[in-house]
Image (cartoon, rainbow, N blue to C red; front, side, top):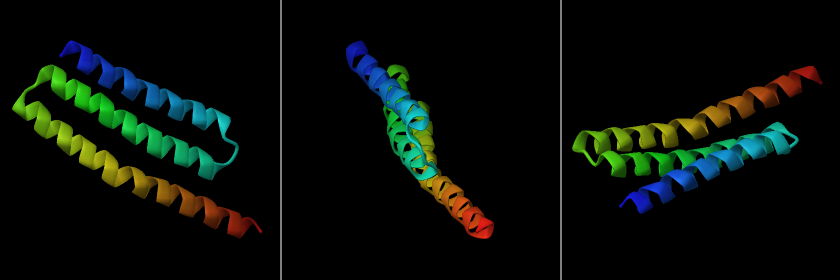
Length: 94
């Protein structure tokens, strides 16, 4: 069981690391947002599953599901808000 938990945690950490590299490597805001929202959300999902498996308690599973729902509901909305404000700023500058 520890092997499976370790795989979830390591894969989650790897996805978050890839998102950080994408944030540094990509050149414009839209590419950076795509890298950070997609890879980070999936990385957090894997990390939370690993943590829930490690503790294996009912309340931990409930909290894990709620955190995952919160992340998957708010990350796209936050990215959309940032992109919209960036686009409006560029239109006002022209």
